[in-house]
Image (cartoon, rainbow, N blue to C red; front, top):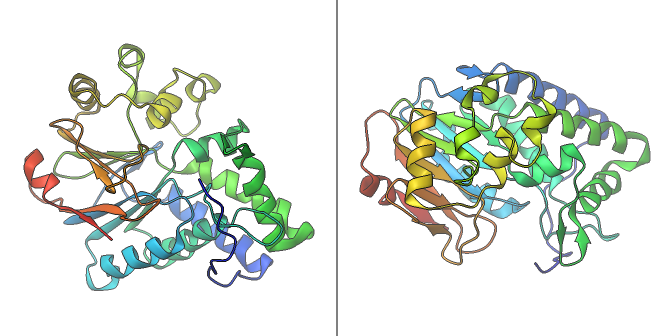
Length: 293
């Protein structure tokens, strides 16, 4: 992954104001209608726009937000996923991807019932302090450095701690009224027999949930896209179709089996899916709802 230091992002808010926004967003995430533990059954929902992994790409976020047009569509839900650990850098080398978390916080304040942020394995790695390495760079360290570079040594550590609190609170699974499940990924076949969806419905994770093979870890890190794995996972989750991310695609999306669609927004073309949630869809109908920027 190349490093792009020059791209300009949104203005960075005043540190004290950002800390307030983060704490408000955390409270709103926890109060999302339909929430049970770390899952959400989407309420008052007629359609859903799901973005692929964004990895700090503010431009793609802004284009998707314009397409979502949430004010004009009060029963439309907008789902972001895996927002952090991007390629855009501050002059001293810090990762700018926290800016997209900041934008989510502002958007959650405007549309608290319509906007959702699914964490990926990168958010999990950040909050559990298990470094992710890419191109010989410690992505966790770059993210923390970016926060300090943006907000200064006085506020940086407080804001960084607030980001981690937010990541821990984010829902890891969303269900539409029509039986479509939205998660970052799905457990590998070898972990499915011990995967317990009830572990996702608790307010506090156990340490083992976050370890390899645990419910949350396997949900966010798994790369098994076989038809059997998808079908068995959906059966356990009580859903019919799956929209996920996690796996990069040069085309912006993948259709690995007859139950799943994978979207990716980290590069161009950027894949997303905007689908009706008030009626049951076939897999072919869901695939037909995929678009790219």
